[in-house]
Image (cartoon, rainbow, N blue to C red; front, side, top):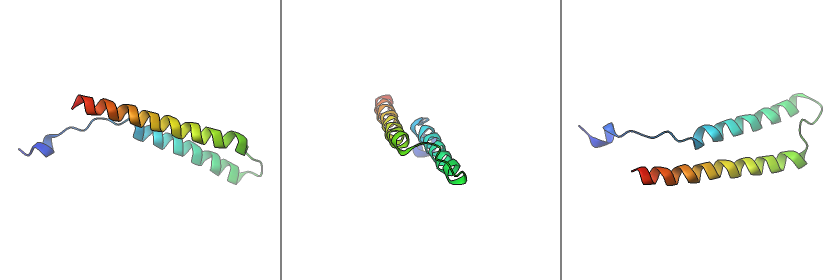
Length: 71
């Protein structure tokens, strides 16, 4: 058998975390677009986006380091 075909891939939690983060962000933009009122002010939204991206990046770095040690 081909060794590449039997190779198992580990679950990467950064992918779903990133997807949920961007879906929530898209939901906020959609809600604001459908209403006449701002859902969140820019002073709240900008730091939330940056903190969320920082958390996603941290999860990515931590899981990548862990996966390399498991090989």
